[in-house]
Image 1 (cartoon, one colour):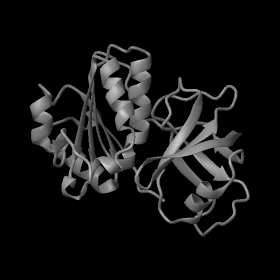
Image 2: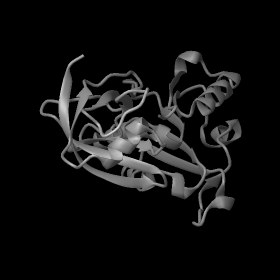
Image 3: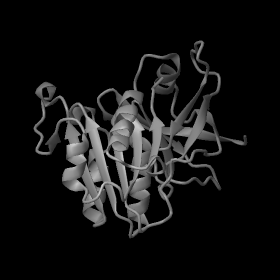
Image 4: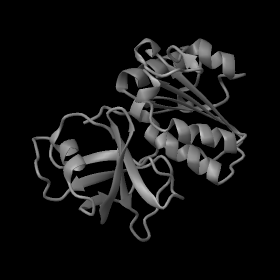
Length: 240
């Protein structure tokens, strides 16, 4: 697969133990919102048996000036290296790949069900749809433990303000451990929550992303509700 050399230009914490890494976008580099690419560190300060390459969904939307990824900060050689290498360091990336992209029939609504770092590809899709003023109805159910753990709340709230076709439902499951106030939903995403906000569960196409246990649970919930398997698209985020 063809590769590109990109420079690390910035990094920022976007939630507790969660960091975004921004890279220069190579000339001519294009991708579809929701796609991923492989990142390979060149001569990192440390390595381990898992190697120097990882796959990440692109959290950036195609219209944005740079490309960026977002990851939970687990204690691995790859992530320690990514946090410590100097800005300006070159990293190798492949051409984008992946099929978790927004369907093209804009008369069919899209419902996104995600948790934690599974939001990355979905952020890209929602911001791109908002930027392009798509007429498609979009709804996002986004679960996290606490607001402190939740990347991109501001981006998604702003998209809802700008896009009358997009509805954003964030829910927190461990507010008793939060130091912040929260006026939104609480509790896990379940069939009752979906039925309360979706007139007919059988119509949308569903995109599920997040930890494997959540993806499996949400997929089974939709199947039990009678949703066609062809209307369910999934992606697991196991972390590194």
